[in-house]
Length: 438
Ligand code: FAD
Image 1 (tube, rainbow, N blue to C red):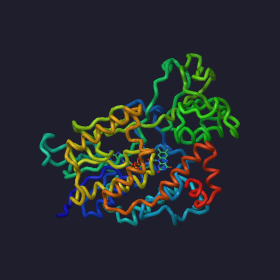
Image 2 (tube, helix red, strand yellow):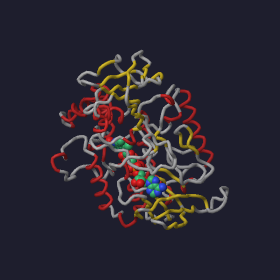
Image 3 (cartoon, protein in one colour):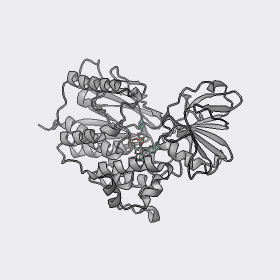
Image 4 (tube, rainbow, N blue to C red):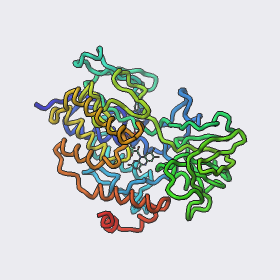
């Protein structure tokens, strides 16, 4: 028999919205808690930055968003939609033909998705969840969840059978340890607090990290900076000036920094720099969650069965959007379908022991392959198998292959053209692009 559960969804970003839609489709009763005053999460551009540019002060007033003003997506338009609600038809003036939409268009898409899916009436805005805990001791699985939230100056409490956590993971800066940094005199900023190039006029900047943000911010800030030096573990070419970029240089990692302001790279080069800009990623953070059976250890959230369910609490505690290096929207959609069907009884979960064994197997495989803990939720080469598994589990037809072909084409282009990948792909038709990877 199908069950309908009372479910709290924490977060009204992309993951919370698609989770809400799937839960409603399975006839659950939902409340979406959103601490801000609109839906869209990360995609709501916030020009404000935090008072502590490194995000180290736990008492700082926090800003959720990490978008910079010029941001365009790093996935192509068709990969930014849901399986049955594609990212097309957005009326966004003359940018609506861009293969890599601007951030405003993604927000517009999510707002339209929320309205068209009838979700707005289920969202409590300005409602920050501050505590989630079991109503009785952990060993009693019959217990429910107590959710405490603050709205204005009012504290409220409500009980739910299940909690789906969708609070995002791009707000808490993650920083590397650099020898000598305590006595380095320059300014340090994390990309969470980067918005526009103007404050960096004529400065010599070292960017640490060359993931998607490091890559894009280096080009953006180079419009104002005197020199931009990127330090990364994944130096693909010989260290030196990047072809076609007047003032951007690539290096190996920063080996140490000196009290006179010098930054030294492992390739032997050094530079007197004004600013170090860390594009070193973010930490998972669940400050409201008060349970014993889940930890965040070096960015491994665990144990989590298939990155979604806590084996201890089974269907009643789940996470959407923990995974990265994937087709993000589609992944959150499939995870949400799975959660909704497990809660209604359409799908069943293995026993707690079996889920724990599966988690351990994944950890062992990672260790054998020499993969660091902080890559636990990085799907990348496992993405296709993972998404196909989720689709099969939830009774969907096989995912159309173009999703994966387009993702592969994008990665190849990124590897071949580096900073110029968007420019190259904007000029190609989608069909030519797909033919190239087949
Ligand atoms: P979020 O969008 O972060 O939403 C979380 C929501 O939860 C927020 O609205 C927040 O206010 C709310 N919340 C948090 N804590 C609480 C609480 N305690 N109580 C109540 N509400 C709470 N993805 C792509 O697919 N393509 C891209 O090109 C791309 N580019 C990106 C560029 C940058 C710079 C960043 C930072 C991310 C990018 N992403 C991209 C990933 C992006 O995070 C996802 O697309 C998507 O926004 C994730 O949605 P989410 O709902 O999981 O998290």
